[in-house]
Length: 250
Image (cartoon, rainbow, N blue to C red):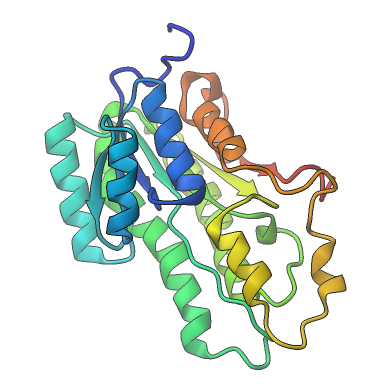
C-alpha cells in the first residue's frame, strides 16, 4: 500500500462527522484516499466540511433514528459499491448531580451514544461482512474510570465498550474487526460544553484530575489512531478499547 493512501478504494461512513473527532476523522480518511460519507444532524457544519473537502460526501440526519440510518446506509452502499469501514463518533453529553439528573437526560445519553452505535452497526454489518471490513466505535476514558457529574454519559460509553468487545467476538470468524477508541482530554465542542456548562455546585477538584498535564489534544490526534485501527496497520487488533488520554490514567 502506498504510504498515506491506506484507504484508497475504500468506502467509509463517519457519524458525528460535522465536528470534533468525527470531522477530523472524515478529513483524515479522505486525505488517505477514502470515499467518505459524513453523517450528522448539523447540516450547516456538514456543508462547511464539504466546502473544505469536496471529496467528502455529506448527509444530514440523526444516527439514532432507525429509519434514517437504514436509508442512509443502504443508499451509500449502493452509491459507493459497498461499505468497508464504519466509524461511529456521534455522541452527546449531559452533566449533572446523579441525584438530580432526569431520566430523560440519562436515557438521552444512552439513546444517542449507545443506540446510534447499535443502529449503525446493525445496518452496516451485512456490507462490512461482504467486504471483510471493520468498525471503530467511540468509547471514552469514562468507560472504565470514574468521571464525576457525568454518570449518564459514562454509563452509555461503558456500554459502548462492552458492545464493541462482544460484537468483535461474535464476528471473529466472519471477517469483521470491531474496535473502539477511548479518548480523554480532547479539544472538542463536546468537551468544551462540559467545561462551560458544569452543573452548579460541582466540586471541580473531583473533575480536574481528568485533564492531561500537557493540555487537551486536538481531535486529529484521535483521528490518527482511528486511521490506524481502520487500516491494514490495525489488522491484528480486534475487540480492543484503545485509550488515548495523554497518560491521565497511566
